Image (tube, rainbow, N blue to C red; front, side, top):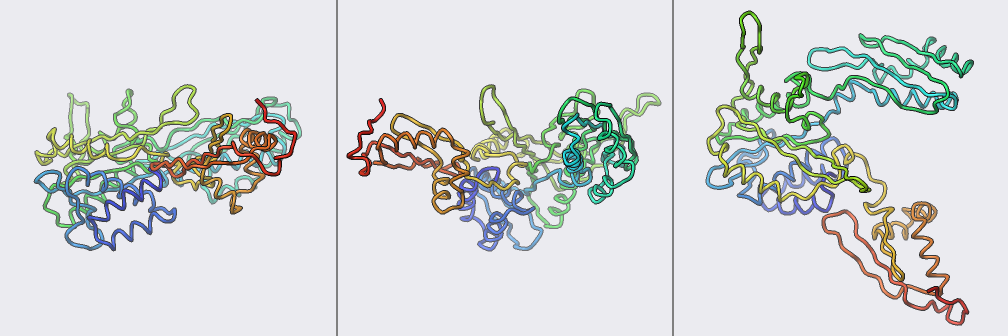
Length: 445
C-alpha cells in the first residue's frame, strides 16, 4: 500500500466511527486483497480520514450505489466530497512497449546474441484522436512478430555475422520502427519512443474520463451542497504535470481541469485562431484537488523519501467559501494529518514478498538488530535459512562470532514502528552458552 497497511488500518478504524458499517466492510474487502480497486479504496480511506481531522465527516444521507463518498462540514457549511484515483494502466495496455522490449531481449539472450553485441531500438508513433500510439505490436501479436520470417532472418544474420552492425526496420500500427544490433557492446536496453502518458490534449483519457464520470455521478445524486473532487495518484503521469510545458506542447493538469470546468472562448488575432473554443463540461463540481506522490532521491542516501503534492483548480461558479483562505488552510491542515507515503503508487501495486525491514540490520559489540517479521517468517519456514544467509551475510557473520566466543542471548526487545509495516528485534549476547562453559574459547576483545 502507498501509506502502509498499519497506517491504512488505523485510518479506517477512525473513519469507521462516522460511516455505515456496511460501507466499512466493503472498504475492508477491497483493501484485504490486491485488486484493481485496492488503491481506490486506500485513497478513499485516506481522504476521509484526513478530512475527519478538520471537521465533521459523514456518509451520504441516501445509501445507494453511485452516491458521492462523503459530506464534509469543516465549519458551518457542508460540502460534498468525491474521491477517485487515476492510473495510466489503459495507456500502458494500449502501448505495451515494456512487454515488447522485454520479449525482444529475452529472445536475444536465448539465441546467444547478447553475448556478442547490443540491441537498441527506435519506435515511431502516430496520434489517434487524443492519444499517442507507439509503433510496436499489440500484446496479442508479440508471439507472431517474433515468428515472422523477416524477424527470424534478422536474428539469423546476426548469429552468422556477429561482428557486423545491422538494422531491422518494420511497420506497425501506422508508423515505422527499427531495431539495431551493434557488435561488441554487450547487453543493452537502450532506445527511444514518444511518451504516451504525458497529456497531449485537454481530453487526456485517464483524467478527462474521471472528471466526466464524477461530474455525472454528483449530478445524478441530486446533491445541493457545493461539491469538490479529489483526484488521487494511482500511477498517473499527468498528475505530476501541474503546468503546461515551456514549449506549450504538453498540457498540465491546470489546463485539463480548468478547460473541463470552465471551457474557453475562441480567440482570434486577425485571421489567426489563437485559442480554439472549448465548451465547459461541468456544472456541479466546484473545485478539483489533485494529489500526486512525489519520490525524492538525495545524494548518498540508500532509499528515497516520499511526499504528497496537492494542487487545486476552481470552476468559475465555485462557492465563495471554497475560494477563501480559511478553506485552503483547512484542506492543507487535513492533508498534513496523513502519514508519510511508504511507496509510490506503481510500487504499491507490486506484491511485497519480504517484510519491510528485510535485508537491513544494525550491529554493535554485543547486540544485533534486524527485522522482527523476518525472524518470525524464518522460524516458521516462510523464509528459508539459505535465503536469509544469502541476503544477510554480515549479520550471519556477527552471529557466528558471538557463537564462537561462547556467548548466548541474554536479552531480547522489540522496537515498535507504528507507522511502518514491520518492527525491529534487538538481541543482546552477554550470556554464557552452557555448552561452552568449560571451553577454552575466549571472547575476542
